[in-house]
Image 1: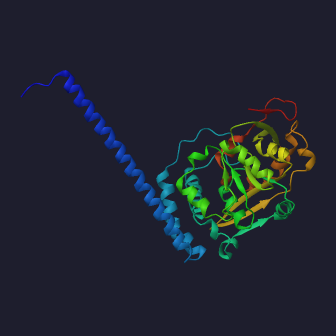
Image 2: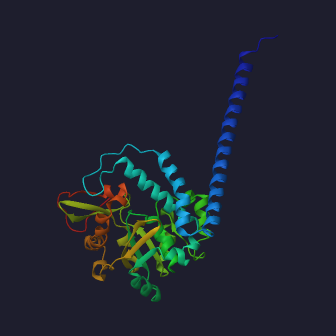
Image 3: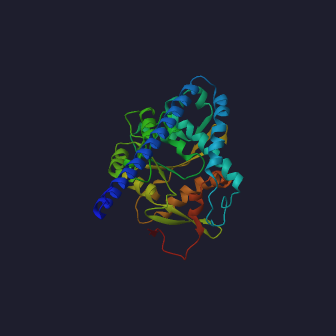
Length: 329
């Protein structure tokens, strides 16, 4: 047999390498398709069960699935958090918290069903009068929340209560998953956007200007920040976006929180709106921030186990004194 030349050997190696790469890509695509199919099957199975079972029965049927997911997820090595409520959590508590999150995320599979009496009876909402009045007057509302409890359920529960709110989140709109887009299509008020990403700020501005309500996190760790004193020599590093949006659009700024009471029972509270005099100008945002914290911190302190590490990281020792209203970032 004739001996191959160096050039032929190099060409064959290149062909084999390309074949291996294509095989790996095809295998990866197949894995993605299997995962998508499995997720879709679970999605429709849950929706089928929800229409046939009581809330309690559905909870206990799906609880083992959430438990296994939480157990398989593992416990990450935590970075040393600052001292304060909720700063340290044992591994078991983290697993329990993660299991509750997985269970509560299942409610997003059927947002249009949350308005049914069997679901709404498990969600107490207080303070809706201000939101209702603003909607009747065509006035925009910024709902300021923090990452505590099942905060991701604020939008679906408020929509189920008859208020077409949307939420501002980080990231890019192109990254929204197929499953999330599917949930958007079955959400109440299908003609009203459910979410805006940071690359959709102009659309979010138009949404508010049209007299709608937008959920905005105050403990987002990127963008412009301000240090708001909370006592005990500590400050809360607050994202200024919610306050600045309210000032820009002449909107009501209302603190909003959700507490998980267990077994798919929740309490949502809309606190006292920020006084208008605190929203007259952007030169001093701290008074508005103090008002929001005064309304929200009692929930944080009473339910610190439900609050995310992101919120804990926002609490820190007070920096050297700076003129009021100065923000960082």
